[in-house]
Image (cartoon, rainbow over all chains, first blue to last red; front, side, top):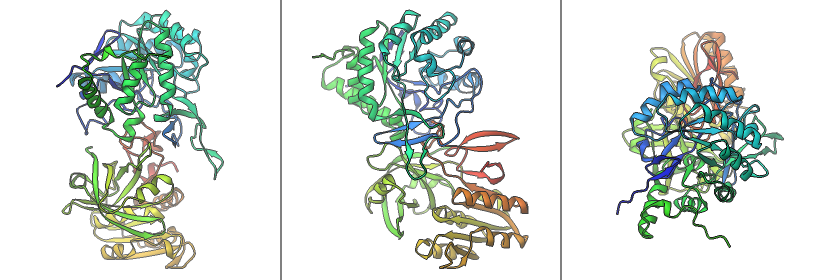
Amino acid sequence: MSKDLSVNVAGVTFPNPVIAASGTYGFGEDYAPLYPLNKLGGISCKGTTIREKAGNLPPRIAETTAGMLNSVGLQNPGVDVFINKYLPELKSNGNVIIANLAGATIDDYTAAAEKLDATDVDMIELNISCPNVKQGGATWGTTCEGAGAVTKAVRAVTKKPVMVKLTPNVTSVTDIAKAVEAEGADCISLINTLLGMRIDINTRRPILHNNVGGFSGPAIFPVAVRMVWQVANAVNIDVVGMGGVTTWEDAVEMMMAGAKAVQMGTAIFTDPYSPLKVIDGLEKYMNDNNISSLSEIVGTVRPW
Amino acid sequence: MSYKCGEYRIIAKKALAKDIYSFTVLCPDAAKLAECGQFVHILAPGFTLRRPISICEIDRKAGTLRLVFLVKGKGTAAIARLNEGDMLDMIAPLGKGFSVHEASAGKRVIVVGGGIGVPPMLGTAQHCKDVTAILGFRSYGNIILADEFKAVCNDVIICTDDGSVGEKAIVTAPLRRELEKGDVGAVFSCGPTRMLGAVAELTKEYGVFCEVSLEERMGCGVGACVGCVARIRRGGEEELLRVCKEGPVFNAEEVLF
């Protein structure tokens, strides 16, 4: 039987809970040859900044056991190009679109958020957790003051639902979560990548030109589940879980930990069809377990 | 740019030299779209990231792509363990290939390959008319595809680092000799970055159109992750362009080696 997989996150209805994660899906166009993008629950677009950004020098990619490192450094054409070139087609094809926004200063964030407020993006995801840029990014997300300040400033300039994406590279992710909730965040997404490093033992050089980079993929999944569970129990706003989600079982696990939806990234590199397989798996799971709405399983883990 | 993603049957497998394998893959939908110089992105069983492998030959009639690759690490070793009859999980074809149609009109083409950069030059040679191939290898045991090149090229010049076969030289020595003749319309090249840099310098000196195929550590392979960039100077400005999308083939004059 065909099921209604839709979920509501901070007032936005996603047709299913599987969202492409920012930085792994571009603005969607690169995967359009394979399937209609609106089969996904939504797309969190490539992180954009107020002005074009060149990013880091290559190599930017290193494989790890059950995962990868990246140090792209937020290369993007700028928020105006996103709004004018990519957004109209994405929206006319019925995609639920999350604009991912990064910046070095509070003014960068608010200037871009004001522009996005005038568009029909469905949600703004604040990237305060990019590990690959020296200024901004994770420097905002690693303190309650910084995370709260960006959230408050953006909250003041937009009516769009604001999702704040948290970094796992902190001592207490729940304190940061509470800080952004207090400053008006509508929901939280986590986890961004873990800071990692690989070294070429022949050249004694780090594989990444940036020396260090963000660790993602199946290897980080247990860390993500733990943090989603902790945050979901610490705040009253919605949580979107990500970090190594690869299969439908992972998605169910993430939802039981407290996520209302999931984002997938690295798994798409391994298998571009993986989000669709997760959606199919979720539908079968609902049928097999007589579940009529996925909200029935959110946060239902029974801790010992 | 259109591409396919799926599991395709390996219908022939051959070991060409130490650690170098040839797969012929039945993939009519992808073969129909493929152009020489493009690549495929292969899933190594059990690994997170796919491996980019250049397309060696395209047979649209038979609906096949031929892939020749070097076992460099554990991922390519896992791919090499696949056998005839096994399925290969592949995204193909990807990237921008060589400009064989625009560049070679009427004049002689030189294809220059070094080591595992040799295979994509075979398909390129097959798509041009008057072709000279210059192929560089470490030693006699590393030589691959020489007969196939002889079948489609007017002249095949082989160089080895140790002089065990052909000239004891790097590819730029015979390339300079050929460029001196003044009848060359285009040079297409794939190989180690240092070799490509030298080829680019030489063709610039002689004012001959040249394209090179670059390699970089890759993520998605389709352009989405912006992981595999190269430093390119276009319109006076330096840009970081995606090897998987704007490349892997770039105009040699634009590449900042």
